[in-house]
Image (tube, one colour):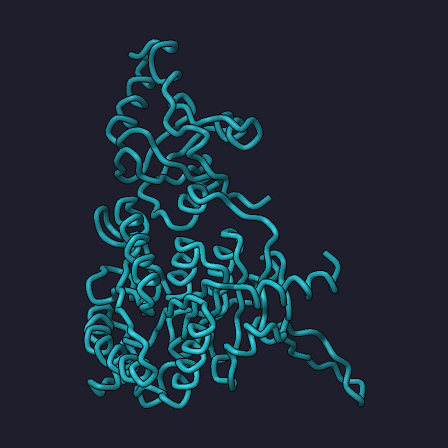
Length: 402
């Protein structure tokens, strides 16, 4: 697209968006003293009400529970490095957060519903389907769902530096940005808006001053069509007060773009920000994609938790990447971690680099047994593992960036 065509498309899609997911960051919801910032979220609530009156459906994803809980308990920020303490704060703060929203939305006679989610609600296909049905019914009844991560019961999601959860435990989203994007993808919403305390995705360019000295000019990137490694490098760094930074937002908008939607990162402290965004005004950074990944492929790539790793040889890697082949047992070198049939596994090369993900057809015990039989020469090549398809092509997605 030309720059002019891109701008017209941006305006058209934002003005036409009917199903919206709005995420408010901790810096927007809370004040420095750990209290709800009614001065900021009050106008945002009014804007969401007006969007509903205009016939649009709105889903709100709100951070802030941990900060509110810490404020109510009088805890110093240093105490929040402990996972259990953050879960305690989330438990205390979630009721405060919902009470604030109940009061604000009740003033406009808008009914709300609390929806607490974990990664397991997206990785387990039955829960994934039930979530969609519940959300669709809420929206049909005119209820505005307010979603947050279920920090109180999840096992690892409040850790700053997370590793994979043990089998059977719910994994972390890492931040509500990713949660909002997964909700947007699942509901096939038209737009995702991430409101934070910065004006958008910022770039810094060298600038010569009057006296000849070199400085840096900080500018908001208005429109992005592709998430590149250069953009990821610019976005690195944590956010003050919340768990995520700009990098987690880029990961979230990438999910939105793969879902065929439009996404905006903007400053939630600016007046009438939502009204201006959906009126088509150029504000913040807008992310537009002209392609769309199919629903099952999106689920495998983004929403499904990886339960194990399958290490393959170079021949299998080339067959999958270049030949569009399925994953056969004959190409597997080893497996790591436990998984069950129909779990999503990471497919990696001999150096441990992931290049694909897929839905496995058998349990880790069965796959391991086939590898051991092959190693001792106990299985006939034609009738044994060579003919066994571990991941069929239609259940496999390439993840390696080329």
